[in-house]
Image (cartoon, one colour):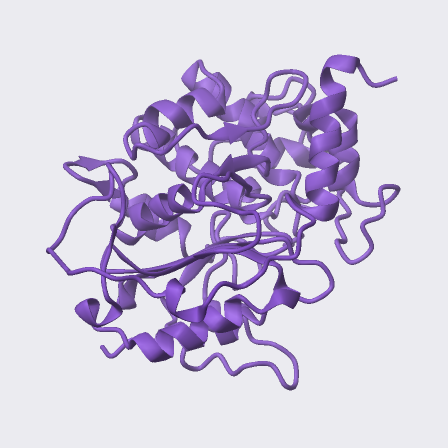
Length: 385
C-alpha cells in the first residue's frame, strides 16, 4: 500500500504525466494583445523583471510575429503560455485560458536540462571531477571492480546522453502503466531507487535509448557531491542568482529531487533559464555556468554512439531534430545553432543564439501536437535581421 504522506505526490505526478497541468481548453484573446509595446532602452538583465518593447525596436516585424502567435494559439494545440524574447526584450507574449503570468506550469522533461546545468556548475566548482566520473562510486549495489557488471562502467556522460545501457522501456504513445518504466517509477515513490535497480543490458555509450530514468541517477550524484539536495543546490546556485520565483521541484519519498521531471515555474522564470544559456551562462557580473559547459552540453558528444539530435540532456541540431515526415514544415530556415529543453505535452524552451532569440511555450497537448518547426520558422521569418 502506498504511504499516505506520499500518495498526493504520486497522484500529482501521474496526473502530470497523463493529462498535463490543466484540462481547460485555452481561449484566444484578440491577436493584437499578444504583441508587446514599449521602447528599447538598451541592454539590461531581467533579474528584477523582464522589459517589453515593440518588435520593430529590436528588428522584428509585428505583423509576421502576429502570425506566429496566432499559430501557437490554435485551440487544438492547448497552448497555455508563450513568450518570444529578442535581444532580452519580450516582443510577444500570451496567456491563454486560465493560465496567468503568475501561474506555475509543470516542466515535464524540461527539468532534465536544468539538471544538466547543475552538473556543469558542480564540475565548475570542483565538486565533481568531470563527465567521466563513474556512477558506481555513488551506488553501493554497483560493483566498480566487477567487469561483468556493465553498470560499473556507466559515467555521468552516459547518464546525460541517455546511453547508460540500463534496462528501460518508455513509450508515450500508449501511456501504459504496465509497460512504461517512467510511470512505474512515479508509482514506486522511490524514483532514484527504481532506476538504480535496473539491470545493465548494453555496454554504456553504445546505444541511445530515450529514458526518463537515466537523468534520475544524477540526483544522488549531485546530493552526495554537494552535501545538499539538488533542489537546495539549484536554489543557491541558479534560482536565487537569477531571482526566479518560488520554484517547486518534486522529490521522491527518500528525499531525492526528481532530476528528470517535476519542476514547476512561471513562463517568465523558464525564460530566464533560456536567457542565461543565450548569454553563454553569464548573468550580470557573474558566470553562473561556465561558457565551456554551455557549449559542451548543447552539442552532440562524438565519444558515444547516440542520436545526433541530443546533447547533455538538451535537444540539439534542431533542423535535424525537427525534420518531420511528408507534409511537415521544412526545417531549412531554422538555424543550426538552435537547441531546446523539451517536455512531453508541449513544453519548450528554445534558444537560437545566432538570432538572439528565446522562445518559451507551455502547453497541455493532447491528441493534436503543434508543428514546432512551423512555429520556429514563423518566428524566424519575423526577424528582419
